Length: 255
Image (tube, rainbow, N blue to C red; front, side, top):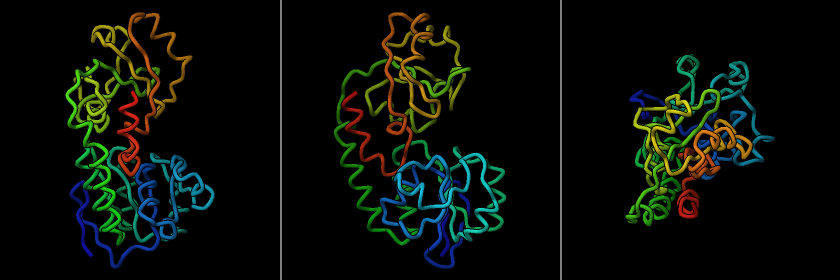
């Protein structure tokens, strides 16, 4: 079976895979929700959903660095990764030994395409198609609303501060959630507090990941921007592009 992944790479599988390694937390959760409990043999230390898989599956490393010996012992017939979350160097090395399918996602449509593609790869086409229908149904009310968007800056890192910019999946989720992303640079630019102040946001959103922002981190920002509202938000709801998207719309509406 021949497939083309979202990076335009050709991936050939001799059969439906029986030993899968997932290198991306949101896609690990997707594999679980597609019913691939027996097939998934390896995950990363950041794959926290479902929780019981952390005890049942082999931890092959993180998203930026893996233990090649552990992957070799697992003898996977499919590895699933992501362009942004995984390091290109080790992905290229793994691809010389195993079939590696990569996602590349900056929009809801691309996330849905990924779900359908993984369904095809793993013999779970019907389950993936049903999931896509449910996600579209969940997002429909958000896409139909025409509320005035709050002017926002979404921070993902501290020391230095880094924000979400354009051409990212989170940027599209911000719009869906009713926020106007004031950061016009692409990707994840570094910002000083004076830069954030100059953007004149109504609200600053502090993500729970990858940096685990907490209430104690608000004081430094509040000293520089005393009149700006600040909220701690669940980063999974904004950045996980797998089956967690089923829960995201309700969370956005609550915000």
